[in-house]
Length: 414
Image (tube, rainbow, N blue to C red; front, side, top):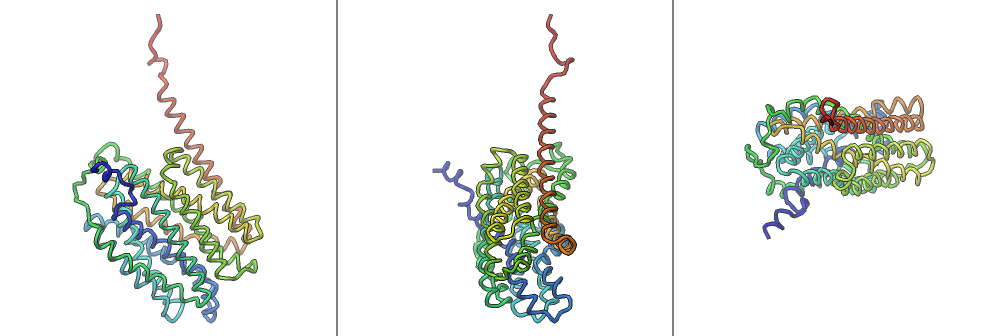
């Protein structure tokens, strides 16, 4: 019986359930109001900056997260993760639902910035807690499950927002109040782990050889994650306007397309742990970026909603395949006493990419159109997939060469 308890699936651990609830809020933070963007633009048409401000409502929380998450990581390392997580969820409810009654776009934009502070607290604490409370296969499985939680949460919230937006463009803001229902379980089961962790890998500190050069590799990982999220976030920020430009302005259809994006990602992320074990990290990144490139290429040449839905499926699946690897690799690299900082910086990189996405993609659309944007994005992601494969081959050859004895090392045959 003890053995069964020790080897139960990670998703049956109440702490894991609470952390997955927290993960579901991150997608809600940005993309939930995407189906309402055209309606909000019409609602505030008198504002001369409405076109840009409305588009920035989706990535606005990302700016606050990018600025606050590293500091939140330091606070988490100094004062613990539990209080930060609970405070973040409470602030999330307040700031997220504020757009329901605020009078104009500038104040709604300000509330979205405050929402980003809440997300910074939640994601930083959540990432650190995954590293503190789980190891090995459980940690890898939970990293995949949190992407599923984000995507399935996004599917439910964005699809619901599509129906709400058909009634009123303000109504999707009420969905942020759902986070209040998650607080009781988090309050009950989330505790700060003891400073002296019993896990084997937690005994490593900054002075050990295994962690001495973690900073440089971690920085490269952070940069790659920022670029990946910048590419992916073209979908929630620009897809609704692509539909409108093509004559499909129904919020329900827009919400359905974004829901399919989340559904495909959520389903594939459930298999992340198995795929990673079978292909390794190189295979995961190559498959994920390859699927994203295929999706964007299809968007560049498709002209029907069905083709757009297929493209969204490929992009969502590819993104869900690569995303958990950033978390698992970062937690393997970072020493125990730096996990809060690592979680904060990793969180910041996600949202830096998201915030930069519309700032870079909107001028490209203005110059080259949606086809030009999607074609160039497909080429970029394909190049990333090829680079990952070449790097993997180089590492494999180097390892193989290292196992082959040099002429001096070979025993002489007399």
